[in-house]
Length: 128
Image (cartoon, rainbow, N blue to C red; front, side, top):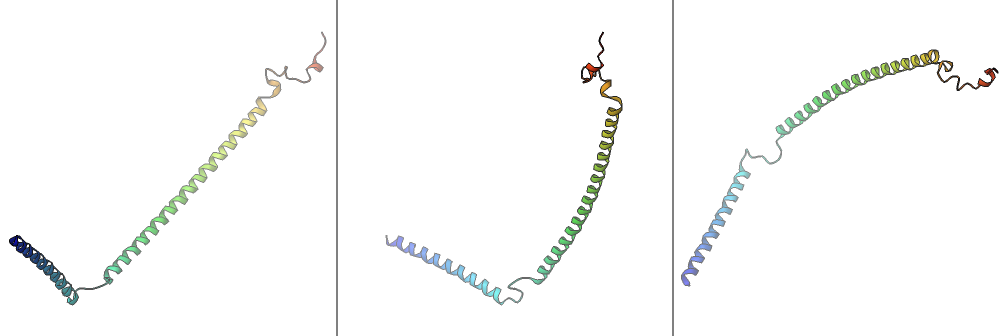
């Protein structure tokens, strides 16, 4: 039993040494970073300026694209309005032609049933 306690103690000591060694390595790396002249804390100004330039270029491209789409939309709207006006003019002309034809060619007295619907039938009727 004494032997297993001794090996258990050695295992704990080895583990503690490994933990301490790891902590020392981390601390040494931290010290190296702090004292390194090339290590910068904060934001890289050149990277920020390039991001800003990229964003401005993207906005300009997007504005140009939007303007082109707006112009195209306006042209399509003009064309649709023209087509709609032409269609309405055609429909008015057709309806006028139909009304003229009905007025001139489809009079009430020319119908087959004209004699049945004549309110003056009795006045026209002569005795036999």
